[in-house]
Image 1: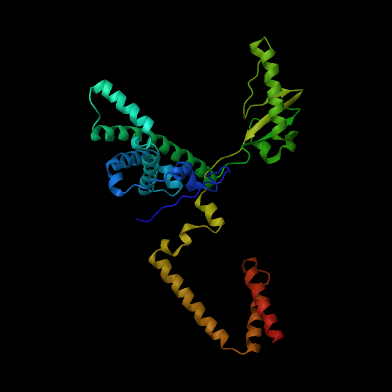
Image 2 (image 1 turned 60 degrees about the vertical axis):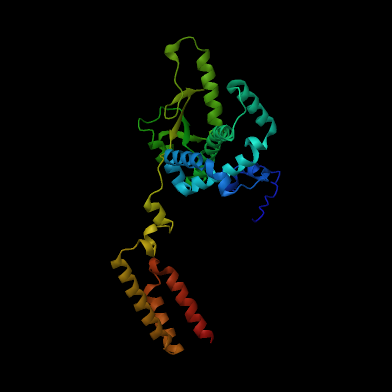
Length: 318
């Protein structure tokens, strides 16, 4: 059997952003294990691993899909944690815990524990251990999910002015100066709202007390302050297309008609390229100059015109 060597961990603290796998595998546990169990030694516990992995996966299915995990991945993670458990917490690995178990068993059952009793105790301990580890997996996947989806850097814009804000507060996002408002930075807004809340709490007349919350204006030092929430939405296919990440651009997602048209276009381009390459340098230059003259003002051909100019200049230098 091949010997598995687990190097010691670095002293620095790791984060799911850069060491995702090490985080959900609880590498500090695994690195301490010197015992590498065989399939036969793991077999009695695989039912617990599989059932807990399935329960966790189907409870947090959308989360696991976000980070690219399938059911088999979660089961494999459970197997790794089983190795950690058998190498660190299985009763034969912890003499103190083993003798405590024997003493309690003799006291309650009036007999020495059998191998079956020992296995059942280990299974009960593994269940508790694995539940905690699966909670860790979910927590780390949530952290990774936030890195994948991203979080808004600002959730609202803050404005202040001497007049009351418009009924449609979102008009301030379009043109706040039109309504006599100015922008306020987030740190100043937090400071102002804290002071405003403190003043309100000191008032004895509850009827004059104003509620300070996002989207509601409040008065402080003669100015109306208001935090206008920004729109939140998930990424759409249009966003991906604009970033050249449209999944339907993949050859695997095109229908037969699109594939046929794409092939015809490729073949046509290749024929034209062969014809162009067969021309003399003088004729090539004429073709390129005509193309440049025809499309130099067309923004759709900006890159093509620049490339044609480069080719034409290269021909002149020959």
